[in-house]
Image (cartoon, rainbow, N blue to C red):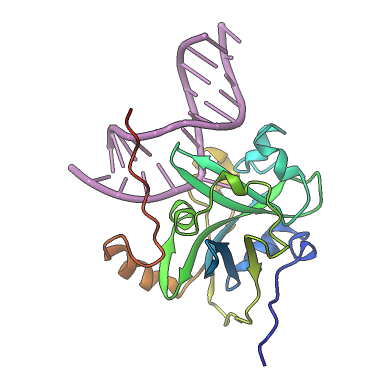
Amino acid sequence: MKSKRKILSRTYFNRPTVAVARSLIGKYLVRAIDGREISGKIVEVEAYVGPKDKACHASKGRTQRTDVLFGQAGIAYVYLIYGMYHCLNVVTEQEEFPSAVLIRAIEIDGELIDGPGRLCRALKIDRGLNRADLTEGESLWFEDRGVVLKRGELGSHARIGVDYAGAWAKKLWRFRLRSVSASARASRTKKQGGAGFIQRPPAISD
DNA sequence: AGATTGATCCAT
DNA sequence: TGGATCAATCTG
């Protein structure tokens, strides 16, 4: 008998952000697009925790961009970074406490998609999914497929690209499966264009 | 209105 | 190490 999908709920995400982040390692991210599903095991995430966390976008206040972080848990926060890449987050905790988990890396059919920009390219995630509800199993959601981490499998590290955040940059709020380190090196030497890898369309010149 | 910036990636 | 590339944000 076919086992039922366990889609992660609003209740799941409405918890302390670091706990959600740690717990998301080993869960699956599922993207439904073009009549099919692409899914990958989450192997790296980062927690961004509230208005005082200088690395969290919401630390600069509630703006057009960060407004979604102040909303309910389980909603997508997708933004454009460096003019060319997208980053996927899922909002956590109670409303008015702006926080989220950044999804940094997944494994699709054993292939490591390492980096938030590459991940969004592979799953065709862009700002059209900003504010999407990730708890309804519509176009993007999270699933528990029963993966249980062994002792010592979860590594904690400083977050990437947030040196400007002073003491907050030292928080060990990046979590990664230790076992992916080796395959990360292998994958990096691979030429690009592998399965599930969406090429950027050619630039349009007038 | 103009200037600056960035939770990245890739080539050198 | 530096360039790509642009929306949001900041500054005057």
